[in-house]
Length: 429
Image (cartoon, rainbow, N blue to C red; front, side, top):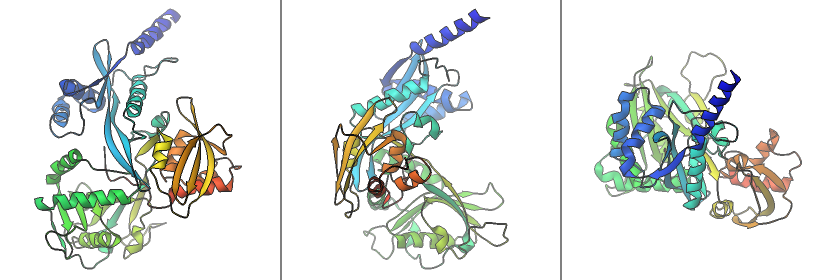
């Protein structure tokens, strides 16, 4: 019996040791599609859908897809996209990690110091980001706790609202009409400006635009041209679908964009006008957006009620890892009133340490490596959440994530990363 267990463990270890990782191009797309199908699909007859996903519109470029192979069989895959993220006014090169998966027959094969397939995929994927000099890596995980092992921290706060149309604000929305092909340049410009204003928003690439536009026939797209001429700027857009799977008809907002608070209000007025056809709208907004304050019933009930009220579900999605602290921080601009200096030690998941001084002068950040004793030691996971603005340093201290002995000056300086828009990413990958 014990000999059998020993042989099983040895075979398990050898199966991982023989793993071969290689970055592939279009010549391997059918193999990649089959691997993704074996990772995610419920049945093998869905393979054509995965092949179509790679053969038509795609964001992957040659060398973006990683295959893990064992004894000639593909057992896992990941994708490394080249993107740009906007953080506190800075445009930063960013790796977008997608399609990390292990086929169903090769999971949890790690033994002792040998890592499993997905872990090896992630380590190689992060190496690729460093090779490409991308200071930040971002992903949208299936389980956040798993990716914390690789240094990723939460970097986005979202809230899904379900609101009866009868309590949405009423008023003028006369500029709304259906989307026209000639609107695309202005729509792209509006979306890009929104990305620049936001926090942790990722630019929508031309390839991504093609992907999203290919889905529009499944629903409808409306834009707000306001009082402008046909060549003027758009004020907002909304892509919505009809959902009749529940007890009442729902408008599901799959995508939206607005260039100002006024434009956002007009968007809700437009949705309110559809109450003769639908009962409610479901829309995802930044986690701090006070939608209930503009509704005709502002109550989010604490008890059972019999009148129309909104419901909201907060959730997290994107995580980031800071790979190059100096380049990431120095690209940002904190509020101009921010000045201060502190020394930090970041405990990286690989077992290394990053030690540097952060010197902020009227919002401009300088980062200098140092050997000085740090004012604060912090994990790469928690650091990512603080730098992204997802978690204020003082709030982290309140729940015991930062030492009670952390100096007020250091906390105040780090809190500045949370001043401004709440992290919220409109792009998906």
